[in-house]
Length: 234
Ligand SMILES: *Cc1c(COP(=O)(O)O)cnc(C)c1O
Image (cartoon, rainbow, N blue to C red; front, side, top):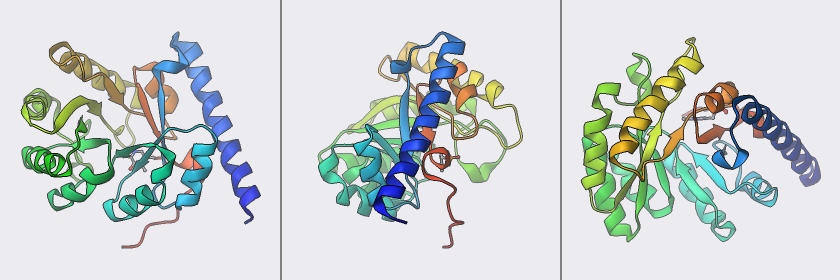
């Protein structure tokens, strides 16, 4: 595929996503500037990140440290905000703290401690979102709703970290609207104690409308922008 074709393809994807965002904002009486679009670029090359930046995208999301670290380095000149959205092992905290601005997948005390140490070592402040499990699938990460506030307190107390909000993935096969409503309620409870925690990260390619209508501030969109990913082989 030529560079021009890829550019046009991504531009068309972005236009379509922006149209869906605009429709959802209109339907729910929200303003477009309440919503941040995070382009999820996992499995796609740095050249695609460059195209997205040229089209005005300011935020990108990645879910694997090794891949993200390389891409963030290659795209350093673009001044983008980097979101780490995948499940994170504590031994990767050092690396992630070098390039990520926000980590959406904070879901246990040991990770809070590791990220705090890593942020201090890197001389950076790392924004943290608590990932909430809205179903009973332990493989997808996240804390149960009842454990959100205590973990949020831990982030708030940790030097090097800033509590920025909550994140969730809609349950497989469930009603995403209902799940996102619960997430937004939980986020309100957290924000009433910690005003800086104003991010509600919800909504992917398949459920971005439900996310906006139910209070999301940040959308994580991959497939609808860049196309279907090849299955990842470890
Ligand atoms: C891959 C990924 C996304 C993007 O999903 P799409 O369906 O491709 O838009 C969003 N959030 C997380 C946590 C992901 O891992």
